[in-house]
Length: 470
Image 1 (cartoon, rainbow, N blue to C red):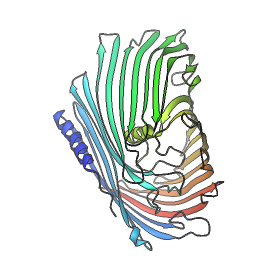
Image 2: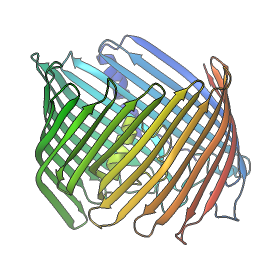
Image 3: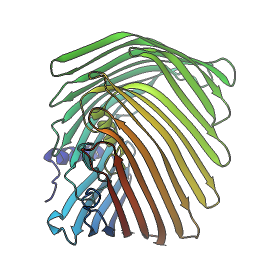
Image 4: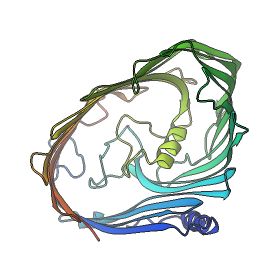
């Protein structure tokens, strides 16, 4: 059973290349075809409950192509992969998935008028209240193709020697192939006016944004905000931050309509600790109450430290649109713990701490995160927290050792309950030649839930793969 690319994808893809031609994109082009071949042994191919596991061997054959073009007035890129899966025992589930990410930018009027366009297809879990496969290898009905297309014309220019402005409109569409009725259109308007004096001790901006999410079924959501933002350098290292403005929010679900509007403000400090080191903190008030944000970056000879905290209204479908447009999914499904589609608005309180170290032949990348969600219509709450560690050790010129582990706790709203997830892998990779690489990888995945309606499961998979560029 093959998942066909929708017709509007072909239209949008044609538009991307037409834009490139219209923008005199006759510069440098790069076309790189490749193929991935992987053989896997999976001991729980259906993610069945403990004691009911069924194993299978899987062959994955995935031809792909990457196209990049850069011209005088535009650029375009396309990444396409056709993932073909062949099962030894469960041959009736042999399947093909399409993964696509295309984007283009054109400068129609030099230094003034531009257009961005994106087009994507990937796969997405349907519901957290079921087994959640980590990739397309696992046989599961809890997944769907997700198509995203967007067009964004904008004006960006300087006004004299001291001011710059950007005015942008964006329209984006998200479509789910099966299992969901929450196809959505996302529209946004953004405008700003800023001073761009690099020698000035004070920088300011007047900013307006309006985001609207219009699902095919269910309630809509709109978020509008206008404010003035000021960053004044009191000394060479210390800056004073302030913003003030107005916001107007509206969201509904069936017959419930809720509107919120009022003033918004915050004040804070920015401390530059060095050329690439800084910390800023803001305290203020929004419609939802007291508000806080934190931005910390510190770089040493070996370590790079960063911390972020922010509070903002979010909508899961809006997040999916942004992830698809920005290629944040990396061509894979959105992992457990990230939003599943819903039209309900929630207040998101996100904290993330990240530490990276590079020494000799070893790189370490670790993070700790905590995400809280307060749903505005039902009053329900969620909390998702975890730790993620990745290690790469290049023990020989062409060989490297890979290790990764993610441990996550999900306290989900409603009847979902609490889940504990462990996702770990260990592997050896070799650069066989300039155009060929191989890897032997072992992956372990498990879920333990306190919800008796949901099954606990374990899955182990060993994969030997080869990637060749042509």
